[in-house]
Structure formats: C-alpha cells, structure tokens
Image (cartoon, rainbow, N blue to C red):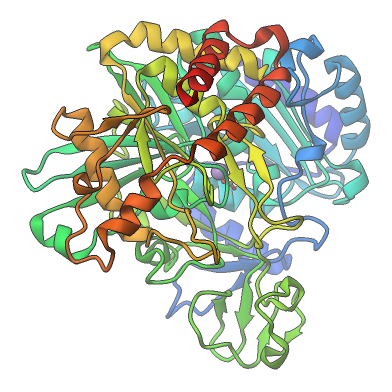
Length: 592
Ligand code: OXD
Ligand code: MN
C-alpha cells in the first residue's frame, strides 16, 4: 500500500502495542465498503434499514454511556501547560502517552486493526492535509469513508513525506472512567480510547481538522476554523462566499443549506453549500483569503431536521447514510426522530433499542424521547442537492465575508458590521451564546465561546487571537469584512422576533451588499448597523417597527456586556493582545 518509512514504522509500533488478530488496509473501494457493511451487520454494529426507501442506509446504537463529545476528558498535550492555555485541559505528553499506551496495550486482541489513509480536503489540493487513522471499530471505518476522502491515492500524494497526522482509536471497553481524547500537536498525533461516539472517534473531524489543524495553521500561517462556508448566488449569476462561525446548536448546518424565500428565489437568488462545520483558509496568490471544507460529509444533529427546517439536509440522508442513536420504526424498517414530522411512530424502538411508547412522549422531558437529543446522521456531501461545484475543487473559494453569531435574547442586534478587521477579531473573541432549554443546566446562561472555537482550539487562545490579528495584517485591504448576526432576539415573553431559516437570506444579502459597497449603514457604539429600510422585508409578515426593535442597541445591556468581556479577558493574562484590550476600551468609551 505504501513504502512511506514514517508510516510503516508507526504501524509496526502500533501493532506491537495493540496486538490485533488481523489487519485490514482500507482502500475506499465500493467492494470493500460493501464487505465492511456486511461484517458490521453480522457483528451487530449496524442494522440494515429498508433498502427500497433508504438505499445504503444503516442504523447504529452507541453504548448509552457514550453519546456525545466529552470535553472534560479532552486534552491538549503540549510540552508546556502555558502553550495549551487556560481554556484547555493539559497533561504532560510523556505522562499521557504512558497512561494511554497502558490503557490501549493488547486492546486489539481478538479484533481487527483497520488502517485508514484519508485526506482532509480534495486529494492533492494545496490546502488539504493527510491523516492515517487506525481503529478497531468497523463503524468508525464506515463513517470515515463518508466524512473524509479515503483512497490509495492518498498514499501516492503523501509519498515519503512525514507531514501526516497519526490517529489511534481503540474502543477498549467503552469505559467512561478511562475515556480520553488526547492531542499531541507537536507530534501531529491523536489518541482516543474507550469511546465509540462520532466526535470522539472520527479523528479527522474535531481532533484533526480543528484542534491539530489550528495549531498547524498557527505555525504555518493559515487558519482552521469552526465555520460553515456558503456561496450566495445573485440574479446576475455571481457567487460570493461567506464563512460563518456559530457555537454548536445555533444552526450552522441550516444556514449552510438555506433555501431563500420564494420572492428572492424567483428573482434568481440561491445558496450553494461548500461546508457546514469546518473551514481551512489560506491566503491565495491574489492576496485574498481562500477556504476549503476539509470534510467530505455531514455529521449532523438529527432531531429538529425536517423538510421545512432543512430540506437539503434531509435529502442528503436518503441514501448511503449512517444514523446513530435515532429511533427505529419497525413497521417499515425506517428511522424517526423528534421533529422529523408529527407522526409519532407506532411499534418503534427508541435509541437504546427498547420499545417506545408514543403515549408517554412529552416534548419537555428528554428521557421520553425516541431519538437521543444528540442523535446524528452521517451523510455524504455529494447527496446534498445544493452542494457547490467548488466543493471538490482544491483551489478553495474566495471569502468575501466572515460572520460570527450566537444566541442572544437581548444583546446583539440582528446584524452589524465591524469597523475593521481588528474590531472584527474583538467581536469574535467576545462571542457568546445563551443556553437553551434544549441543553442540560440553567436556561439563559451566557457562555463565552470565542470564534466558536472554545472546545476546539489546540493552543493558547490568547495566541490564537494574536494569530487572527496577524492574518489580518497580511491580508490588508483584501481581508474579508467581518460581521455579527443574531437570529435569536426575543420579546418579553421569550418569543423569537426574527423568523430565521430561509429569511436569513435577507440579512446575507445586506452583508454581501456591504462587501460590495452597495448598502448603507449607521455607525453605532458597536459597529455599523443597517437602517431598517436596508433589510428587504418584501413578502415577510413583519413591520418596520419590529425590525427596528431588533436592530437597536440597548446601552445598559451593552455596558453589562462590556463588563463581562473584561472578566472573560482576564483568563488570557499577558497572552491577550493589547489591540483587543484597546478595542474593549473603545467600546466602553463609545457606550459613554
Ligand atoms: C459538532 C459540534 O458536532 O460542534 O459539530 O458539536
Ligand atoms: Mn461543529
């Protein structure tokens, strides 16, 4: 398969450590995928769904103790604690290697070691990177075949280079007490033990494409971000690209696959999806910022996905998709989740495989749900009806606007533009979202999540802010414009004031018009805010007064916000760039 000495040496070391019974080199072929599916069904790892309705689709159930990413067991193991910074768990690399090797030793006994060569990004693209994951889980292999590009060509592109990321996954006993997701950014290595759940074990995704890649980007002068990428096509046929960072559960996948309201659709507006979760961005030869989506599929949250909330995501799941922890409708051997439709299924099994009683279902009580709230679909990007033509091209797309956002009931206006790049970095660094009833814990608690990277930045977040500022200096006047959006402003009863979903297109149009110098705005204490007339409300049941309301900036709320940002900044100590402190001072001064 490969003569790469660095790969062969590492595999030898891993074989000795893990002692597998068998070794399978994964090649990405259709024949091998079929065989792996068969093995997975035989082992009870996958359940084959109705192939007439859902061809190539399977259901998987994880251990009930293993249903989400585990941030408290995720470590960045850099040579010093300071390098990992105050927002990451840290452990000395030598100590952690020893602990993990002790856990993993002999753990492939009686199992197969799968070797997966994969490319993050189109194979051979100058923006792509290569990884090799070994795993004892056929479920992981089948997911990686969807989420990344797996092919012998990866070995060809790698040649004898040592520039690849090592990924060791072992399911061990799925023991939550011994579960660790560890990153060694200085060694390009990831080790994950005792989990079988997506975000912990599909090592190309959060582990490589964000935590390791953010570190690589810092050292090599590029950016790995928790961002969707979309192309907005106007009636002239021109496409402008936007990259947007929102914390988890703020609708990145929905925005990435947006369908414009009928009025704008008829005029010729359209959105193309390049990515829904991760963007890798580099400065191109013309000095602009170019982005690729390093992934090859969508690992989306199932509950709430339906033909109205996200038609394109739902379409993407209709073939060759793996569903994890959703409900099984035994009558027709298909799947269901809360929010798919209003027909609560009879004769269904819940996500744990137990009979589900629709009569006991109570939306407010998650324990009565048929699907786990974090149940997922792993769907090939090529299934998406609005996938961009650029998706498979290695050159990347030029980014006109970067958009930050979160859930804020009263604070941020519907949309505003930063004064410049530095001010935009300030906005990103202070990004926050309020918790909803959908998550465990108190409702309405503000959580700071800079650039939506809090759980994903592989080094000191103060240095990450510095890196953003440096990128801005290199980009100069070619830098994308930076905006902030908030689809979640509410009235005093907690009702959302903005319709969201497809109507967000009205805001995206203003953003692109601003980039093109075509739209007006008013300068405020926090940046440029549109006049209500600047947002096209045609065919929308909303009066100008309501819109005006969600574009206002309440100085008392913002004074409180500035005080909270000050507190948030204390964490970063002397790694906080002076420019950001100055931005905060300016904000306070502007607020009077
Ligand atoms: C995800 C996340 O799963 O951000 O994409 O949590
Ligand atoms: Mn994400």
